[in-house]
Image (cartoon, rainbow, N blue to C red; front, side, top):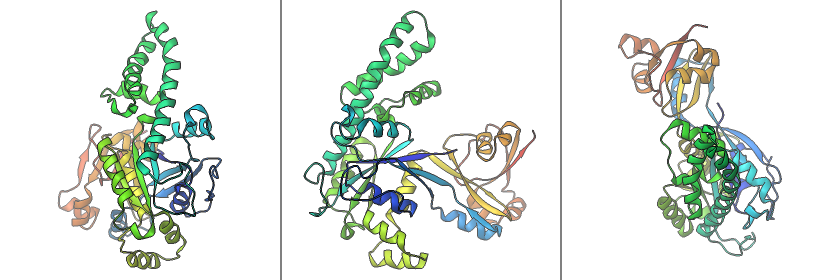
Amino acid sequence: MGFNCGIVGLPNVGKSTLFNALTQTAAAQAANYPFCTIEPNVGRVAVPDPRLDELVRIGKSQKEIPTQLEFVDIAGLVRGASKGEGLGNQFLANIREVDAIVHVLRCFEDGDITHVEGSVDPVRDAETIETELMLADLDSLERRIVPLEKKAKNGDKDAKAQVDIMTPLLAVLREGKPARVVKFDDEEERRILRTLGLMTSKPVLYACNVDEASAATGNAFSKRVEEFAAKEGNSAVIISAAIEAEVAMLGSEEEKKEFLEALGLEETGLTRVIRAGHDLLHLITFFTVGPKEARAWTLVKGLKAPQAAGVIHTDFERGFIRAETIAYADFVACNGEAGAKEAGKMRLEGKEYVVNDGDIFHFLFNV
C-alpha cells in the first residue's frame, strides 16, 4: 500500500533542496532559476519511529524494517499555471496523482536567490498556488458536469451520483474556496470524490523554509504562515532546507546529532515533515515482530484487522481467521510476546476489530 506527498511551490523556494535532503540523493537538481526540475522525481523515505528500535531490542530481531512514505518533487508552479503559464498543465497533472500536498514556502530573505514574484511573502505565495489549483479544478468540473447532467436526466444512476458530488464542489470553488471544505461522510461519496482527481480536495501541509538562524524558533514569515494555516484548518512545520542538506551529507548519526545540538535543534526538520506527512494522510503504524525481523506497516486510520493483514499479503486478508494482538505498551511492559501472553495481555481479535496505532500482530489465516 503506497502513499505519497507531492512537494509543490513557486520556483526557487527550496523544493528540490528539500527533496534531495529527504532522499539523501542529488536526483533532483537544485539551481537558482525557474523550472530546473522538469520531470517529477520520486523518493521513498523511512518514517522515523523510535518504537521500532525498542521492538528490535526486545524481540532480538536480526533486521529492522521501517514503514516508508513516498515524496514526489514537482517542478515549480507560477501565476497563470491553470491557463498553461510556465509548465503549468504538465505539473498540474502530476499534482493530481499524489495523495497529499507538501507546500514549500520561502520564509527567508536572500538577495542572491531570485524570487519569481519579486519579493518574499509566503502567505501571498500560498494563496497564488491555491488559486491556480482552484481554477484548474473549477475548469475540470465545469467541463465534465455538462454531459453528466444530460445522462442523469435520462435516468443514468451513476451519472446522477457524480453530479450530486460535483454540484456542491462547484459551488465552493466558484466562491474561491478549495474543494476540501466540502465534507462527505458516505464511503461511496468519498470514492466518487477520489475519482475526480481534484487537487484542492487533497490535504495540505505547509513547510516553512527558513534561514539557518531561524531553524529552531521560526521567524516573522513562518509565524504568518502558521496563523494562515490555522485559519484554514491545516498544519505548518518549520524547516531549513539548507541545514537539512548539510545534515544529509554527514556520515554518522553521532555527527548529525552533534551538528543539530550546536544549532539548538533536537531533531531534523525532515523528521517533522515526514511525521507530519504521515499524519496528514491519516495513517497509523502497526508492527510484526520476530527473530528474523521487526517491521513497521502503514494502514489508514479506522480500517480493520483483515485490511491490516492484507497490507502484508492479499492472501492474509482473503483467508483471515483472527489476529493475535498485543498493544505496544503491553509488549514493552511485559518484555515481549511470551511475557504478554503470561500476563494475559495478548488478545484474539476478529474481523471487526479496528486497528490501533502501535498494535503488534500475528495473523492467523487459511487460504
